[in-house]
Length: 65
Image (cartoon, rainbow, N blue to C red; front, side):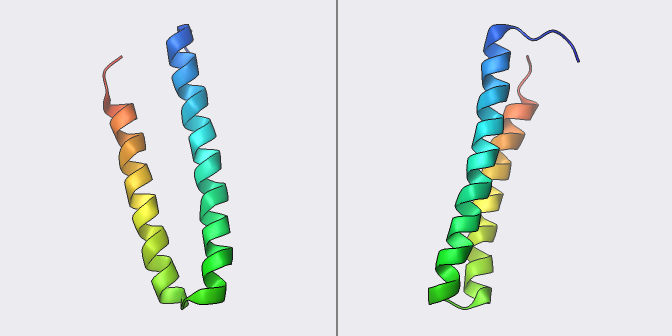
């Protein structure tokens, strides 16, 4: 792995933290929605969350350094 400058390190650590948080939020949403809505509706909403966050991740990866 190439040497990262401090800003790149912060960006990578932040991205990792966001992915961990996204995973926790998705799990919490699934647990909460399981009590209130059908699996189909729950899956659709979580799919939207995943789409948005993956687009954000892709934007970060595609930016030139």
